[in-house]
Image (cartoon, rainbow, N blue to C red; front, side, top):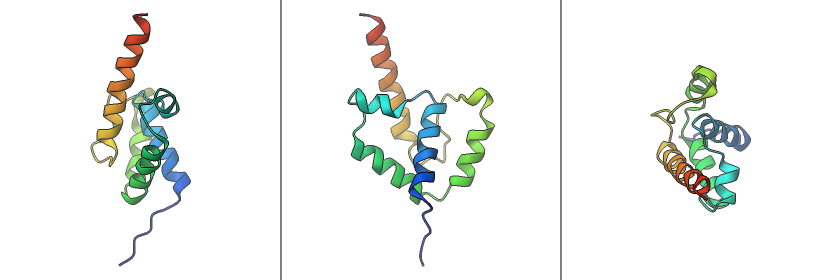
Length: 98
């Protein structure tokens, strides 16, 4: 049995969009050392293999104002994205304390 993974570009944008909706900027996370380029690529590849891009696109479209507290429960990257959100919140609080 073979599995169709879909385009890497599609899953790059899905991963990035879910992150953005929950308040995580993946470019900033990499710049701040919270996410390595390799880990980012692994997240996109995990998304690519998850076969839920239709559900993900529907979830993204359903978020009021394009904002959500957490990634969808079916997201293969939910744990990683939630951890990045928590880390970004800590670094923002630390920056505002300076």
